[in-house]
Length: 498
Image (cartoon, rainbow, N blue to C red):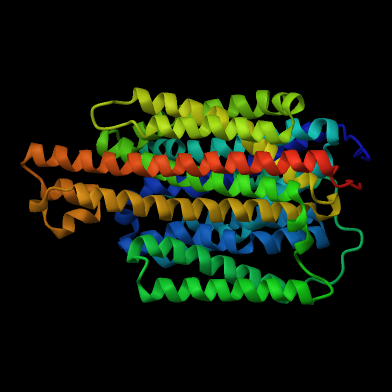
């Protein structure tokens, strides 16, 4: 395999890429703790709040694949700078938004910028680092990504405790400016040397299908899976996805090379990543509710109590993953990491209202260590299965699969939680109490025994959900390990041309 020429500024480039990635990931979770402030400051309704949160993730998920492909064709440095500029402008607009609709539009603009930034960071990374250093660099990149997810509630809670609600967006602006200048000065341009005209129809179809599918999943948990709007949107997304696949097979210049999915190395990384995101995304979403509603921590306190996850991921990704991968190989490392993470989720499943925080702490440490081992290996395996000139597309696929897995995890595990929760509530609370634990506690006001029963029902539902998440992560680890071991025996990694 041909070495990529080492750049003297490569570690400075990695620092810039990680800073850009951090703010993008933070904005996926930071708004969750700002809901009361936004409701008061902008007079936002519940529907407005949902769109403020979802506009960002919907637009980003819909455009990830197209943005990655465009970065291959027109230049990854150019895509990074475009993404930083849009993200910074969107954040500035959001900071001074005067109405809910203005903030929703600003969040959508930020989502477009994030769609170019997220795959762009990984695509530039694999271009800048050679094979000997790439695994370590990807480990650091993955650690920052996980750190951003866990740190979002903490950062948001701190800013809201000391400043106005616009501060959660204002902090992005100087980072975007610094990142833009640093990318312009440090990052070398790279693109597919044989890139042809863009696959415009493919880009439209991929964006529309991904946005429709993820919107259906998000709205399904709100309106119910049998709601006509949810079913229609989901069916439309499936049809658009089928048309996209047909077009990619038919056109001479496809945005996505479907032959990638015949590569067991690629499939192993994809399967592991999707199932890990399914289990992790859903489980952590539910865990934040458990910490606040059952263990009665404030949003900021709950954020700090998720910090062991971030710390253990940081240690495992940056210090252990590359070393263990060299000794065991990609397949066994994926299996080991996801088995440990699955064990952590199973430990958290033991939590009920009387267990306190200790089982949660132990589970979070195990999850962090396992995810920190597995996810850098998954990203490295996927990118090594793709020619370097298609790095943007490969990174876009990786991030899209992560978004899909996490969205389905939140929806499916949330549905399991709701079913167990409603079934375990005292019958005298009434139908409205089943909408959420706060609604049940409100209905049980003045009756401590009934309130305790509602918390126990929620904890039982969370245990069932966490066990399903643990099973999904374990299956993902076994499947990914099998496919990656088979790939290591039968296929070398794809030659990576500079």
